Length: 149
Image 1 (spheres, helix red, strand yellow):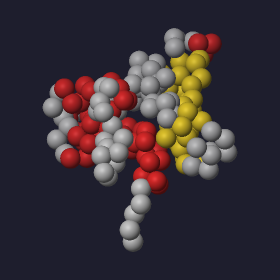
Image 2 (cartoon, one colour):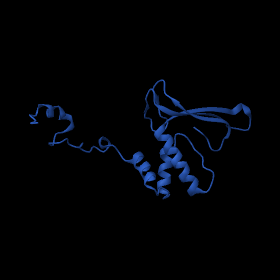
Image 3 (spheres, rainbow, N blue to C red):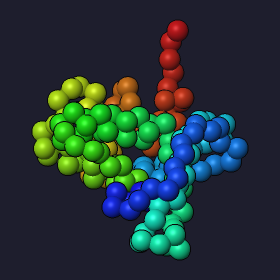
Image 4 (tube, rainbow, N blue to C red):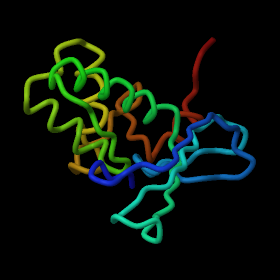
C-alpha cells in the first residue's frame, strides 16, 4: 500500500472504534464491532507531477499494529537505515527479520511463531482429545456420562 520509492504528500494514522465489521489488511482477521483498530490513510506521488497522486487507506487490527511497531523497532536497530513500512507485507517482513537473525527476544520469536505456526487442521493433525479420551466432535457424549458428585 505505502510505496517506499514514492514521495509521501500526506499520511495520517489514528485509532478508531469499529461501528461495523472490517477485515484487517494484514492478517485478514475480523475486526469486530466496538473493538479498536488502526486506520491509516495517505496520498503519495507516483511520478514527478501532481497529477499522478495515489490515495491509500488501510485498517489494521491492534495485534498487527503491535507487530508492525515491533518489526519497525527491530529493523531500526539492526538495519541502521531508514525503515519503510509497506502495508500488506508484514508477514514477509517478519520472515525476512527471522532469516536475518534479528529476532532475538522472546517477544520477537513469539511474533514469528504466531504468524508461521500452522493450525492443526492445516497440517491434518488429530485434534487434542478431551478428558476421558473423547474426540471433540463427540463432546456431547460427556453430558450422557453418569458423574458422581
